[in-house]
Length: 491
Image 1 (cartoon, one colour):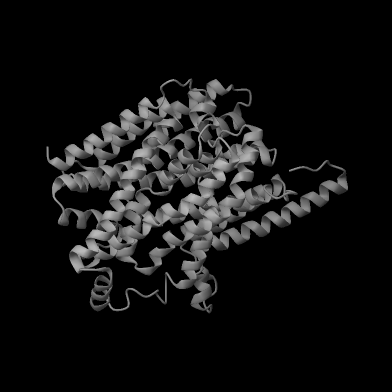
Image 2 (cartoon, rainbow, N blue to C red):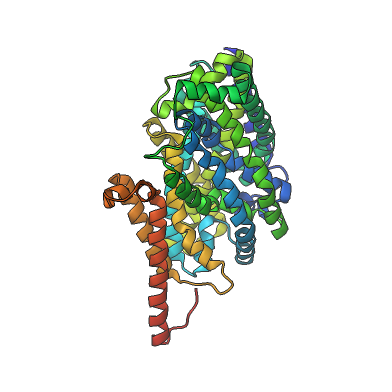
């Protein structure tokens, strides 16, 4: 067994131990298991949400897109800053509603805000589909990290299987406490590793950042400029807007808000998070450094840029450390996705859809049984291969952002909209997005004569605009009709 593999195995064993140990002294009711009994302070909420934000998407995807796409990758850094600004105003209101109504799952918020269990079921289906894509990212990342860092000793399928088993084990036992406990160690380690790699590699290979970019420009003229077709400035800006609006509608991020002890802890978290976002810039430097040092990576293989340059630069034991830290970046968000998906399926799809009288105790047991099944299905999709991390993340973000109009309307001092508008808006946005993805439709195909500034707008944002208009129109029509008929109004 090589040194790298030994260290990676030690990281995984340590994470499993910490995750299982997190249960100590707690009785795992559904609320305690899913949202930590709403007892997390500012620091723990920050570490948990930062652990979810910095996943294999940013560990491998950010460096991979810097390597293959250049400046368009900067949207990954930009959207977070805007999202945290929005979160400062939105999340405390969401926390108050969730606490007042005892929300445990992501869909509970929508079901209680619009007084519709059926809407909770629909939101759950959208959320589970979006999280499936996100879980694929984490599991695929685990496979890549372990296989590459172990120098091919461990095949991706074995790494994915072992890691999935570990996640299911500690989530079943400790719930969100297991995720939070691992996040403490993971966040410290990833901060150190990201800053070190982002500084060391450009200095080691090029003597500085300016020299690195000069050499890239000589080798690939125009690469460091925003493209004039495809991923243009128009795509860049629209993607930043789309992704920032949907940032907190990732169910495993949203429910971290439920775990906060106070409204102040939620607000302070949004103030601290931009500092953590800066770590992503160092991943970009790694990707740029790899362009000339490990050339030839194309398509989904561009996600290997970080690990390939690390293996070329450092001794096996240090490659093992980086691989172990990479495993932790997948375990925290991956386990939170599993936790949230199983809770949604058990509580909002099964109970609200088919068995409204099922007890919380039964729902908790069912959620723990769903965990391995959902994980197994995700593993199956991972093994089929496919798109890059960023492409999967963009699809998931576009889909989950279709919940934004209904969400933000419920937070207004005088809430606007009703369940009919929410149903229609989500449905309309999902249809537009499905057509865009399934048939490769964009604004250029719909309007062949449109300039690039219009034709390259992210179709997820187009779907969101259709969603919002449908929500407003249908809510207005049904509200007027109900008032005329004397039906009592409410959300």
